[in-house]
Image (cartoon, rainbow, N blue to C red; front, side, top):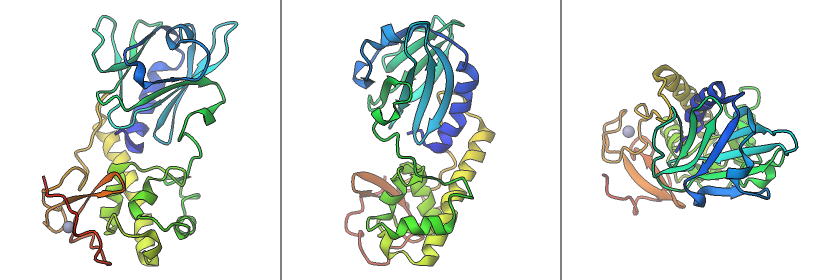
Length: 288
Ligand SMILES: [Zn+2]
């Protein structure tokens, strides 16, 4: 899934390549992805619109569209979910089967949103109506804004929570933002079990987690900027526990394990991230 560090890298590329371009043709490959909340069809509505801006909001990508004369301004909002990815290609390349939406641009190139899992969503809404996109608002505290994401602010949020810490980190209305991958990485860096209850974390553990959240996102941003993966690739070689069940922990050598946290899988090191309450050790899936 593209998470914040992936999108922090991809969105500026999209903005650089797309802003100022006008859509000449819009083709829908996977109608199941579409959520059009304006009257009409996407293929008829989009041509003539000029891309005015591209920006990240949580794990969404927002494309502001300026209308041709007589039409209303629209916004295209894409939620890539598990497997969605953007591709910019030259004309003439055949449309792949996993292409959800393809926008042909006035420079002849095509922006494709591809999704092999068909779990992503492509919303077309009137400009300024972000409330029509589920999950786009509210936006939690920006974890990378040191003025906003203070230890005091984080502790105040945590005090309201009774759930498992991994779920807290995934709550984008509270924190901007973690998906499964970097939530696991932050908990590993903090030495906290993903099933630990937020209400049972000590002030020291909360402080460690707060620092780890900033560190993990900052380092991921730096690594991805250095590697500079081209669209539509995402770079994950640097992660320490995510999707590494059965591999040795890079700190202690114990095998990384996987477990489920309310429908989300979690990867962790049982030695570096002990469960102080003794919970959770019964349902580990077999590594691998
Ligand atoms: Zn370990």
